[in-house]
Image: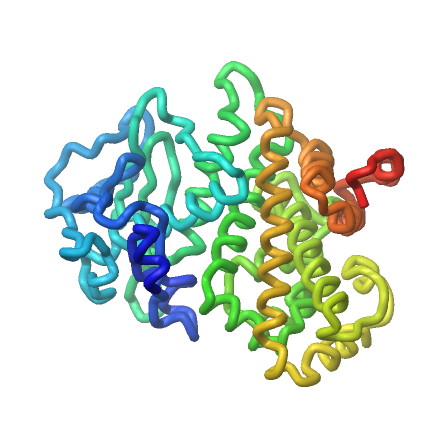
Length: 409
């Protein structure tokens, strides 16, 4: 703690998942990189600000865009030390503080992988992002210069507020990050054929990677399956192992031949392939470190062979799990960082006006190669091919590239 205080960060309380999700009813103390005392009442900083409308407002819709001009509630004050972890989650003011902290957290995570500051794609028009934590709308949206949240009605007549759901916040800001990194499509030029599906899938991955930066979430995901994450790829087992929405979305078995052209449906094979590579990398790391003994082969292969393999994995991870939880947690963190780094570095190779899944597949494999993770690139090729995103010809060409490259090892 003293070391972090010296670095000058700012404290927030954030929920890794909606507090209505079992096991996530208490927020986690999180540090964001903004220097202590630099976040002004609102909260607000040089990149974004929170607006709390006094009355219900309608969702922004062109040509009605920020800034909000109606009556506003008072800004939330930081503590005397400049932090925001003193705001109680039961206080209505916590909504705006939570969204602000979540957005800052997502930016911190992805700027770390990218190695540079993320500049808003709307910077030519707006200097800062406007955040509105609650409107009368059963949805949420990230748009040009704004981020706003509604709610999901619950069975008992209440409201599940999206402003308290890290998954929703990280997904929405993921769209903004992608637009900043791969560009906005021009209105007079059709976007790449897979651009919108890629956006949806990668925004889900932004949320998943972000969630795996919470100790609470990492511990829960691992303990629910005694360290075995292979079962998270099987839709009929997910409900037994995890409540996390991101994992339910990412842990799917959909191939391109299984999906429609609807962007959310079409996003699932790419999201699933990246998730498979994440889990395979975690498993490979655990085996290499002697934490578990697993049969050879990939997750993709395992789907097409012996169904008892799932039980083999479960037994291998369950053995002495309590003694190796923290080592497995470190292995998962390493796998998370390798995959996220490859994904982030791939964005510089993509263009929203021409983007195809094949482009995205080549880009992440090349990025993994360039960052010195050729073994993970091999895993990624297998996962993308099983999902029918890469064809046999593509894998042949990538194989030739691997054999010629000194850094793909």
